Picture 1 (cartoon, each protein chain N blue to C red):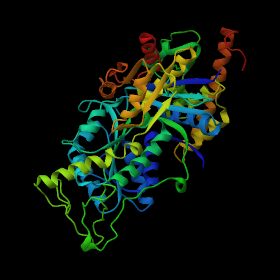
Picture 2: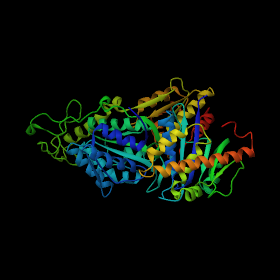
Picture 3: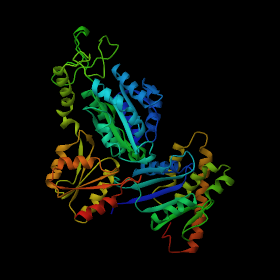
Length: 193
Length: 375
């Protein structure tokens, strides 16, 4: 059976969701040699409005380039969480930015305050997307942390490498904590990590 | 050759440069902006020229001028800008000036849906400018194909002295895929044929065996007249029926005689298909998936993907119409290519349309559902 992994990164325009989509696609496609397709959907506004980016990762050529049933959903605001939760497949991973998402549709959701972490620990809200990217690496094995690190360094503006690497680390740390809490909630949910 | 993650628009930029494009004039518009952005950066690096014009009318005028001066020229736009370019596209057709126009379709009419995909400009790309005129329209489905189609577009425009339209859609233009760009030395690049006789012997629109006159660059010592009026072989306006008719016929025939070269299709599992899907652009990808799913369930489905939309690849569609019981035409418009399919089908097969205009791509499930319905 061929392997196809679908991730949707959603939130509002300006949160950097398309950028982390590109980074994920680059990590999986260029650094790990898989087939990837990254698409996006956004409104006509420069900021605000809904924004989403999708990454399909496969070991064979990708025909349909958009998501059909999500393996992972990142929701960086309430709207996108409400709108896309139902596109998750059974046992799909729901990651929410609990800074903005207060009503969470399932107790199995992984709640991490990405924006709050970016603001308080890194001093810049703008890197919330990279914090989320760090967390994503902990809930899937389609990309390794190492590839993601390399892809981040390729794509972020010069002079911001350090803060972005720290953001990635904070995301990984927060994800590990969240995972631990989740493990207590349900021992059977995560097979092994 | 190193693998890169590129957008369709970025691949078009690379294709244009590989084909020898050295002049771009345009007015950026979503979802084609990355083409202008990319060429603004890259053209000066290779000694080319990028100009941001005041609007799309002028953009089209500028690339015609640059092409007359000998440069391979291109512009890129989307629906609203494409409408404004129509007048000068007609001029390029009539005066036989090679140029490439990229139209990345978005929802329309008017300013429509700037960031959403559509396939609503299929008929406009053929008949947007008035009068009987030759035109070639190509539609890519993958990022890699964006590169190759752009090279092809320049080759066709140079070979046949005609404007060529690359009709993309937002999904393909903005999608990123892993591509390995080919070595430029390995690509076939065609340049327009230039006159070799002394300038005083040059007859700019004189017919020849190919039906495509040699084209002198302005400033190269060959003086000639260029007009949008129907002209005689020297390029001056004429109203003599015995000059008009051969001119019009040559204009149309230079394309019609070369359909084998120009018409590109990509058949997938059509050999024994009882249900054939005819699709193009991003929708062809959904259709391919639906065909694979249908085959898994023992349904004999196939896909005829059209790369060349105009001149409409009639012989290929006739062939599938002959053998299939049903043809399904999914499109992100109210039915534009399906009309052509019906026209050439002539009752051979059942032609079913699947149209979607809600700004979302047609999904594989929707195509598959249609296949199940018509079984």
